[in-house]
Length: 95
Figure 1 (cartoon, rainbow, N blue to C red):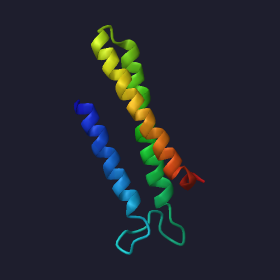
Figure 2: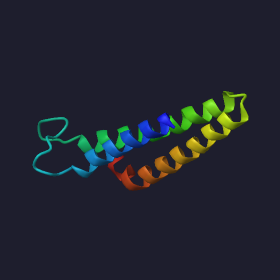
Figure 3: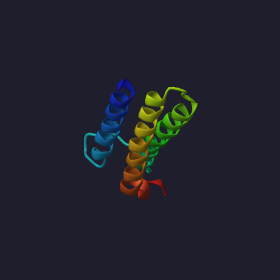
Figure 4: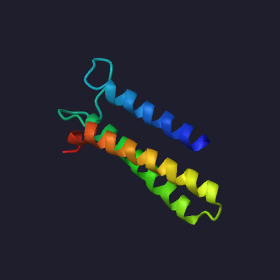
């Protein structure tokens, strides 16, 4: 349950950063005449969701205890849904 709380906190923090794009108070990442904040924040949230899904899937496959394995698979499914939702929402920023 601690991992789910850390995952949710990190996702909410990154989504809050993504929601702050384009405001006057947020400095651009990259400097100069180009702005990399959309690319960087989108890549970070996709990396977080994808890696947490993959790691929890590996943990689920490696555990011998059935209950712990099932929890890891459930968390992997939740993280995969988060990955797909974030990709459909922020994937256009990667190009």
